[in-house]
Length: 78
Image 1: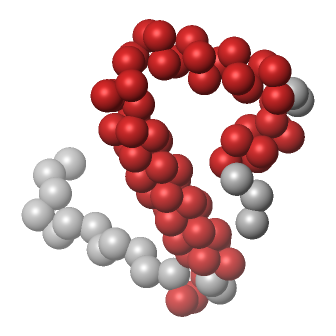
Image 2 (image 1 turned 180 degrees about the horizontal axis):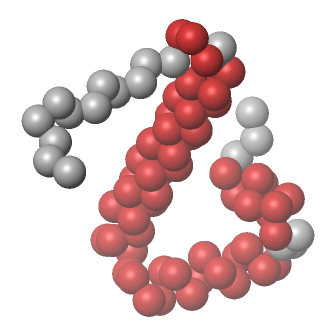
């Protein structure tokens, strides 16, 4: 499996030099102590996004009769 930097490079067409410059700028802006926390938060966000899209794809692939539809509230006023 490719590293996340390689994936970003492929998506945005960035070379090694550009990635190094971006990492240096991040280091200067946030400092060395906060970078691991930022990377962890970004990783968790990506994980949640993938999980949500997978669940959405599974829901969309179900036939209509299998999909659960929430019943309307009978106490609803018109």
